[in-house]
Image 1 (cartoon, rainbow, N blue to C red):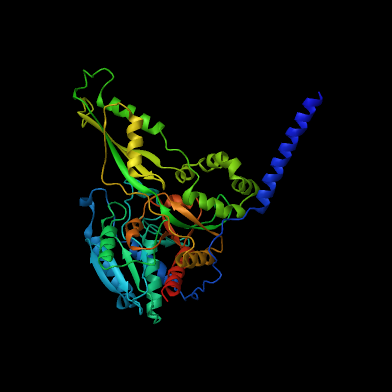
Image 2 (tube, rainbow, N blue to C red):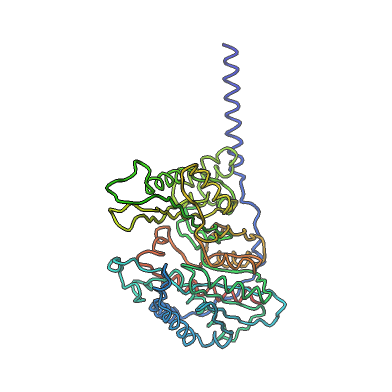
Amino acid sequence: MKLIGKIALGALALVALLIVVIAVRTVTYKAPASADLGGVKLAAPVAIDRTKAAQHLSQAIGFQTVSHQDKADDQPGEWDKLHAWLQATYPAAHAAMTREVISGHTLVYTWPGSDPALAPIVLMAHQDVVPVTPGTEGDWKHPPFGGVIAEGAVWGRGAIDDKGSLVTLFEGVETLAASGFKPKRTVILVSSHDEEVRGQGARAAAALLKSRGVTAQFVLDEGMAIISDNPITGGPVALIGVGEKGYGTLTLTAKAPGGHSSAPPEGSGGVVVLSRALVKIAEAQFPLRLDGPGAAMLQVLAPEGSWPIRMAVANRWLFEPVIRSQVAATPAGAALLHTTIAPTMLKGSPKENVLPQDATAWINYRIAPGDTAQGVLDHTKAAVGDLPVDIAWLKTPDEPSPVSSTSSDSWKILAALAGASAKAPVAPGLVTAGTDSRYLQPVAKDVYRFQPMVFSLNEIEMIHGTNEHMTLENLERAVQFYARLIATAAV
């Protein structure tokens, strides 16, 4: 009994020691050393005419610059109208900048700085929007291309993605140019026409800048924002994307003899083989990893979070499986931790009573930092095994972007301004979708992704969805941000 008692006391002592270690690490936990923003001197706020800015965004929404999957369905004249409108609406900006049209309708503006030795900054916002799903027009509170100003917001497709950024960026430039501001550092605006489908415009802009020997101090594009109900802190957080996932689509094709559906081959038709392959792929998910920008976001915000969150992050050596499980409890959270697999399209027979000679599936992958396109292909082939399907990339995939600095002067300016705009903590993050900025990576020291707008997690769902709208508060906040960013970074 004495021996048992000693063992029990020893076990209790170990448990007590473990509790003390966890508690001390939690209480003393601090976010990883971050850049000192105290030395950043932000430009003063500018005067903004919110009513006029809202009218301008309303007008921009009316141009149906819709990028369709089939380019033949696009209406090039709508882009021409938008370009003419920009020139007429922002005369001071166009007088200050040179304007080039490349790759059809992509715009590249250059506002020359007085010191050509300084690396320029590049600000991005695309012109095109996604289609409105046919049959859902009646679900909108206001017509999707009406640009209606109501309920304290501007309503319509593109109000956020990405005419909201385009208009507020030009509003900021117009305000500065009209006041006589002259940048010391060159400012370049890149506005592609096909971000939602092909990305050819951004590629062309990158090639143009590369041919001129440009290496920008930083690039800023859409991608992340100020989240008012961030689940880590329970309050607002400004998230700046320092990296984004790669992108690629694999096609799986199962060939078969075809024929009449009245005499199907037993259990071996192309559709059946393809279905088996898809199930195998879906079951072979990539492992969840707590690293990269996703982990950095947790580490930075944990001191602002609840005691359980702080305790888990401070004692990651013990709680990492729990952290991964909690983050991955939602699809958006899981996407931060691994390469995702999304079967999106299927094709079989052109008629219900004809056996297909081939059945094809398209699987979209968002490739996490640390993985590669070749690794995805190998992983997929291993999952399929010996099933007779052909696997190939639909087109050359995009690798994950490099991760940009969180200690550079560029980061300090963006983080200081984002924090001032949000009146909230700032943290790095990973963009799980794709932006045009990935094509500018070869001509920039750092690439960041941030829209100076406040959204709740529920409101984010309106992007590419129904009832997309920009609040007037966000509109004014974005104009102010872009004007102050240029006035701070370009001097």
